[in-house]
Length: 101
Image 1 (cartoon, rainbow, N blue to C red):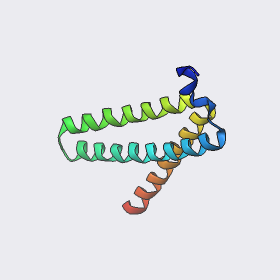
Image 2: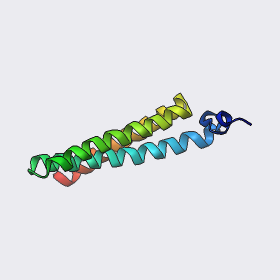
Image 3: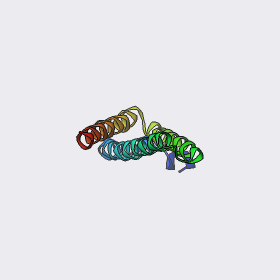
Image 4: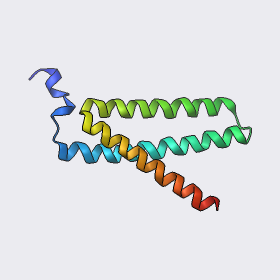
């Protein structure tokens, strides 16, 4: 068995790939939007601009890496990860609206 066949993520069954990508997307989404909230609070509250920049770059890098791993698993896995991020966004916006009002 050569090394490319050993790391082929598309060879995993869909019954394992799609739920794991959905949960991974949810986790990515919650982390991304929580970091976005912290960045906005730092900017509005005149916090440390270098920390805000590091948070912005970190959340973008994390999202990019997560989607790259999903791309390696195939198109359906990427869609599942994207769905997870969008659900996390919906939940976070709902939570902020409930707490804010």
